[in-house]
Length: 223
Image (tube, rainbow, N blue to C red):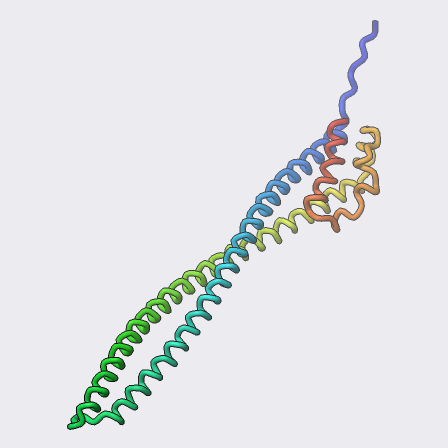
């Protein structure tokens, strides 16, 4: 019986296998990063919507407070006009008992209303102070969110460039004779057909990676 030696892979086939492994490893890293960025982006978007809603509520509250202040100012002006009319009608001293009684009653009413308005003024001042504090806190939260969103957008841009560079490396491999040999050796898998690998650079990043990975895994499985 003659024993046959198993054929060993050529150096070129080994290099091709290493190239495929490297592309697949890079693809996994890129997909992990894209997944993290997608989750972070969705969280930032949700936080942005919450900030929008909070700011909208603050604008409504600010408008309501402004209207309360306007009504207060109108009421205070009436109190001041009533007090001025009282001073004009009522002398400091009079022998007319009825006039004195009427003036004293009106003075007490004016004083009571003025005291009430003073309480309203203090309440409005406190409301305005509280609102201003919450507006400042909201503005700080918005600035913090904007800074984090800017960093996220920068990371997305860098990762997309990394994906683009990876796709270019994959396309360079697809145009090589080593790739054609590997495809033939793997039985011409459909995932490596020309139409499956066209226009990779125009596809969404995750889809482009998935299409390339499908082909590379088919080659690896049959290597």
